[in-house]
Image (tube, rainbow, N blue to C red):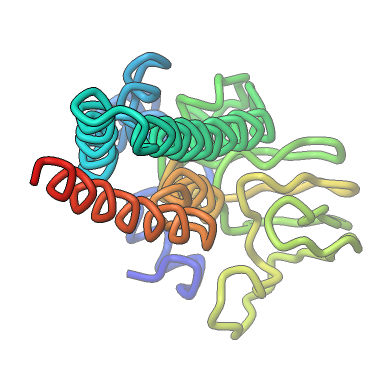
Length: 262
């Protein structure tokens, strides 16, 4: 179901909620089912294991073998320049490993920056009363109350809006504040709708009452965080060239080793 395209009445029914929000007991059950409202790391690895991985993948192992063969060839036939080739291969291993590790490190720093864009607390209706909650406790079906200066804690459908203008720079790159209202619109894309508030944006002015329909990694903001973490899996042009060069050096080293053995 595309929650952002539904009327508010259908969304209430789908989320089994209402304008008075959820009971505390129901919210606890939903949190156990949906998880915390936070930006998660896709894969948790220690500093040492990430660095070790960059020097032990398949092509790195080929290069280690090629460097070893070059040094063995130099030992068997000194003065043929094989030692220089071995050191060159070690240089390629070091440069490629450190570059790949730096990319992963930058992706992790970007994730930390994204996490800091979400608020730590928000006001929500529980058992019909406005209470301060930790943002991680929010679940689909919660009703939140927002005012000027507040950061939006999750993807929400507006129930009521009074003079709401939103800073969407973090999500869309749009520098101008965007007006938001509770009247239903017919835009298909969630980012273009005026009756939606997204996690990672903030209210510049006005007051709003909104129904949470997506939390954590299921928000548009969470999708950005997921893509950020997966970005290092796509090889850059430099990495592709280094990989190509690594293959050539490995083949050349193997050929030179066989020639020196003959």
